[in-house]
Image 1 (cartoon, helix red, strand yellow):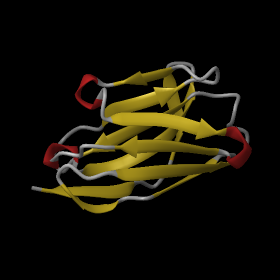
Image 2 (cartoon, one colour):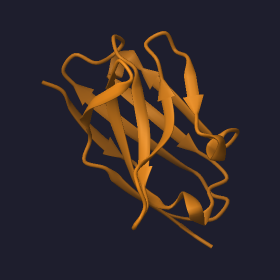
Image 3 (tube, rainbow, N blue to C red):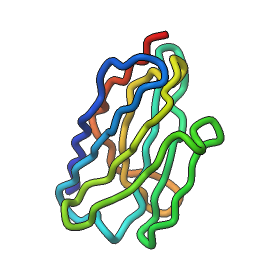
Length: 116
């Protein structure tokens, strides 16, 4: 059984930064890829970033150059450093554990609100 707990969300002005954390219990690091997703009100959940067990990273185009995903295997934690935040980045952010190309465990989410 895997449990994922996100933290670090909050209210920030446009141009500001936040760092989200996702701490896992159970068998996750460094065996599985981990991802970050987000869902804004009235929108579908969308992929944000992914880090593989070998450390390769992937981002959706809208966050490239602004967001950085990383992991600390000793702490069983994956991070999402978000810089130059925009109002359109406002959403609930979720971390998830990958199994193949799918994700089987999800956190409860953390709210990020970017004011203009």
